[in-house]
Length: 138
Image 1 (cartoon, helix red, strand yellow):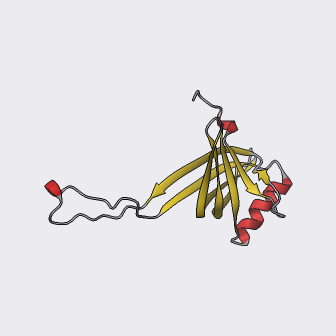
Image 2 (cartoon, one colour; image 1 turned 90 degrees about the vertical axis):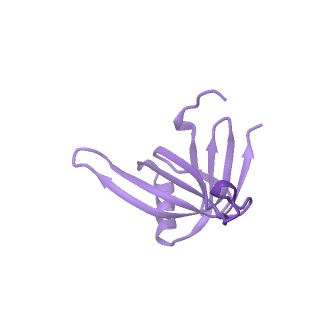
Image 3 (spheres, rainbow, N blue to C red; image 1 turned 135 degrees about the vertical axis):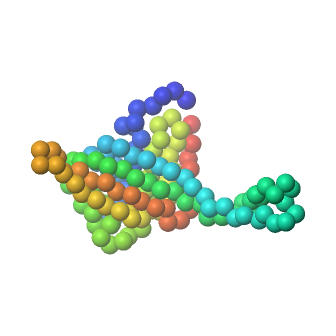
């Protein structure tokens, strides 16, 4: 895979009627992180006292975050209402020349800021709330 433009990493939210995904407009930065909790099974018989982990166990999760400026009243309102209603909906992350990840996320943080001589910006963070599906680019 060759280098990709950061602007092509897209964050999309399912629209209000559930018929399509809408790009979260005005995003300047986006970040996707995958994590898993481990289950340690080390005991007195562990070779050399090295930690042992239980394969295939633990809780997997994904975190999304991003920041931007207000560009589109429809997607701005959608994000704001999802946060205040604590609603869990499907989101889609498009990674160019790699694939897309789709699944349920909840907005867990929504922040607004602005300087006296600049634009109002927002930052948001999302946490996965169920199974995530990966679809590779073909």
